[in-house]
Length: 224
Image 1 (cartoon, helix red, strand yellow):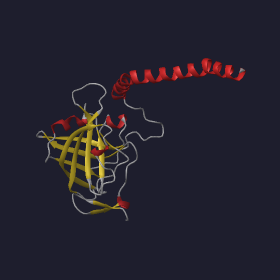
Image 2 (cartoon, one colour):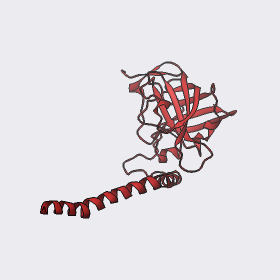
Image 3 (cartoon, helix red, strand yellow):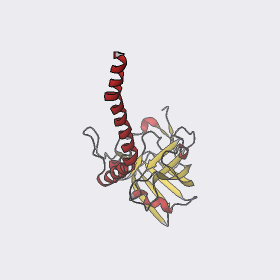
Image 4 (tube, rainbow, N blue to C red):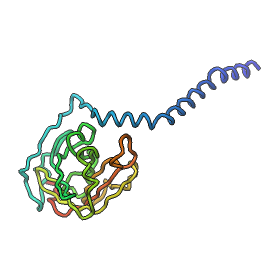
């Protein structure tokens, strides 16, 4: 009898308040999460990420002098591959009767996106015959994506070669929609994306994807 009374006391004084506390936290999280995300993303876009002390700040290895032009094969051993935060090429988007040119940086945090287009480090390099995933802010470098049309071209120039892609698809998708790209594809595809809609200020859950397939460019030989 005493044990039952002690158990009820424990439930009354410890378990129930704890459960109420957890439920309250969940309620507050669900209620205020969108506002917190808006504030965090707005601040992030304004201030940018700070670099850690052991990160090279925008090391630039790109020159217009390439090993190859638009054709041929290049040995992987002849390529200086970039580290995080390194400018290793440039992107040129041919649309709206204009050529929009910007640095291509290996890395896609806010610090990278403030100075160019950011190459997601989990995707592939031009010439590796797979998917290249590149992002940019729609308030600066990738604002031009709203003008792009199927059939137009995008070029990437690196130290080891030049690559031309033709736009084959343009589509807005939810940010978590993984059907927008396939990082394991065995076909060279360039995917550029930015936040969508373009003219909405604040947090956005959708992304604007511009997909292009390789027309010409040197392939990387990984075995040499």
